[in-house]
Structures are given as C-alpha cells and as structure tokens.
Length: 159
Image 1 (tube, rainbow, N blue to C red):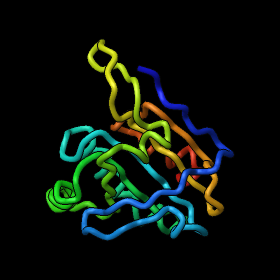
Image 2 (image 1 turned 135 degrees about the vertical axis):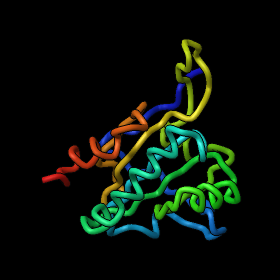
Image 3 (image 1 turned 90 degrees about the horizontal axis):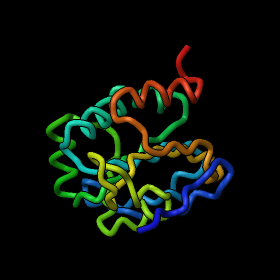
Image 4 (image 1 turned 180 degrees about the vertical axis):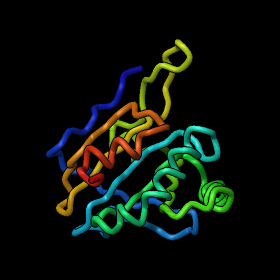
C-alpha cells in the first residue's frame, strides 16, 4: 500500500464531474472565476463528518460572501447524501465519489492510521482552489472539529 501523491499550492487542481445529492452533475471547471473549497470526508452521518458539515453550513453565507463555494465529497451514494442533507439541514453541496477517483487524484485517499493500524481509506482533507483552477491551500489529515474555524483564520476571513 502506498499513499497517493498530495497536491501542493500552485498545482493545477484536477478537474472533475461528480453527481450531487440531488442527482445533478457538478464540474469543478464550471466554477472557474470563484474560489472553491473542496473538502473530502470519509462518510456521511458519522459524528465527525456531521460536525464538519454543520460547521461548513454555518459558515456558508460568510464564505460565499467572500467569494467561496463549498463542495463536500465522500464515497457515499447520492441517496445517502440526500438523507445526510435532510437530517442535518446542510446547505453545502454534497458530491458522490463512489469509485474514489477524485479523492485519489487529490491525494485524499490512501494510507492512514486508524486506531493504531495502517489502513486504506479517505484522508480527511481540504483544498482551496483559486479562480484559475490552481490549488491555493492544501490541508491533509485535518481534524473534523474546529477545522472550519481554523480554515477561516488561514484564509484571513475572521476579523
């Protein structure tokens, strides 16, 4: 098992088209001209992922006001994502990456340590893609709790 190469600031963000929780297709390239926060999380409706999604939802208005779009990506099927949105009143866009190809392209799938064991899995990661489709921020192995607040500070959004 090896880990996939990670992206760094300045890299071109791999384009993707994934299905969201409503069944619509969303492409990264269709969001050019806006900054996009792409975050990868292991599973809908688990405690950490719920906390993170709720934090992004609470911050969405101010993030969008600052010119950011937020896309949450997990391997879950669109039907499960729709339930996740409904259950937790999420307003961010949730995308389904069932074959993990986008996660792999972004270095967000690979070896990680869980409970002391090395396993293959989704690496909780957040990347910020700028208006031209380049990686501006790449954060891997982020904590579910407190991450959005830290990201906002990193982006200079909290006064």
